[in-house]
Structures are given as structure tokens and as C-alpha cells.
Length: 251
Image 1 (cartoon, one colour):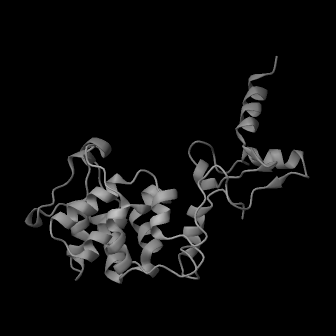
Image 2 (image 1 turned 90 degrees about the vertical axis):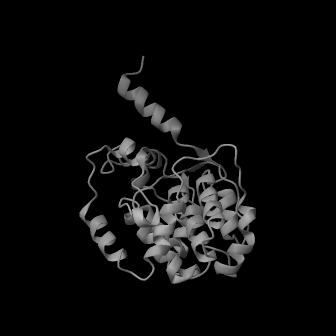
Image 3 (image 1 turned 180 degrees about the horizontal axis):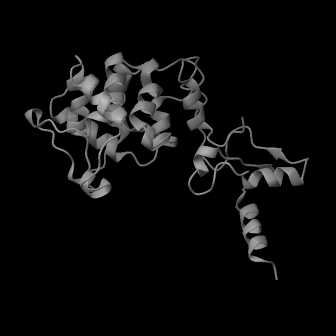
């Protein structure tokens, strides 16, 4: 009977999906915490055992195929996780009479959470969209990361009760969050970022289902879609979109 160690190793090997006789790799960031990122990943041992084995370097067939020239809406459709939070937040901002730029900022404020990375999501999201939107929109997405932790009763924003539940009553923000809040609260675009927090929904209405198609015209007016396809252009964040497109691509 195989030892416990051998069984674990066998399970790890079987967990490596072989697609057309190719090994699928992952990035250290994806497995950090569940495993020690300083250790070699299971797929490395598989590669070492069979020098003739190839590595997946293209599309992952487990994922839906994006169009040849993908748009923002295509990423919402084929890559982003369940995004009713974003859609409901944008809908609320529209109902509250916010500007179109603010509505788009609400629609995009958490796209990193749903498509790229959860930690530091405001900063990542801002970088992701910066080449394609008005600077005010990306600025607001960046600084909602800090503003959400600080109430502003004068404009109707209170510290979310869910944060007390999630983080604890004695939670204190990191120093850089405090710093960014102090900077943002005196900025000319403060209210654009603040409107994101005001229209951010921490409880969702399961009876309301909104489609990204409801925002096609808004996106067309305020999101600069590259002719080559989002990810295939030469913008400073194109590689980030390609990473969302092919998250298991090796190198």
C-alpha cells in the first residue's frame, strides 16, 4: 500500500490537468498561502520526469474562448466572475443621478476582484483601465480603495456594518491607506471616488438581475476600445488584460 506521502504526491500529479498532452502551470501568487510559494510547484516535478512533455503556452481549453479582438464586454462575458455587484452598483449610481463618468467608475471599480486579483483591488483595477478611460475615472477607482474605510456623513456615507463583521470592531487600516485617504479627501475628484463608495453595494438584491448589455452605450461613449482588441494593443496595461485572457499561460 502506498505511503501517505506517496498518496499525496500521486494526488498532486493527478490534479495537474493534461491538455493535449501538455502540462498546465500556475503562478506562485495563485498558490501562495495554500502552499509555500518558496517550494517547487507539483507541475515542476512532472516536467522533470518527462523531458519530452510540453507546457501549455496558449489558450486554456477549460476556459471559454475570447473573440479574436476582445472588448470590455467580452471580458465581462467570458472572464469576469459573477459581477452583479458591479452591475447593481452602476445601476444605483445611474438611478441616483450620477454623471456617466461616475456610473462607469462604479461599473469598473471592482473588476480586479472579479477578474484579476483581490488584494489591493482598487490599485490594480485603476492600472487596468487607466489607458482606456478618462483620468478622473481611473483616479476614482484607485482611491475608493482607501475612502471606503472612512465615513463621510455629510454626503451620506457611513462605515459599512459588513466591515465590522468581516474585519472586527478593532480593525485599523494600514498606514498607506490612511495616507491615501488624507490625500484623496482634498483632491478635486474626491466626490467621484466617494460616489463609488456611496453606490457600492454590500448586500445584493437576488431578485434583480442586470446585464452588461444595459451599459453598452455608456461603455461606447467613455471606454476607448483598442482596434487590435483589449490586450493586443500596446498600452501599459495590455499585458494585464492578456493575463486575464490566458491565466495559465507559461511565461
